[in-house]
Length: 77
Image 1 (cartoon, rainbow, N blue to C red):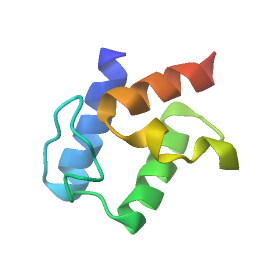
Image 2 (cartoon, rainbow, N blue to C red):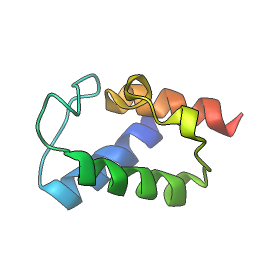
Image 3 (cartoon, rainbow, N blue to C red):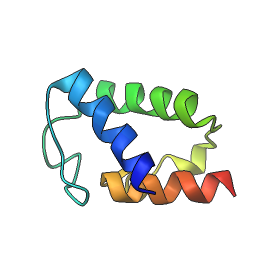
């Protein structure tokens, strides 16, 4: 899980020149807006070879780097 979180953190740093804590809310931080969210979904899909279903795209799955990593692990099972 730590590797997934690091990959996500590296992406956010490269794209937005910003850092997020593991549990920091990505939406409340103001770093990622709606277009940024679409880009993040595309990155996750490619980097982790995940296909998203419409029901996957809920805020709870993407609130923080830790929540995203948990979601990715669940999708890969």
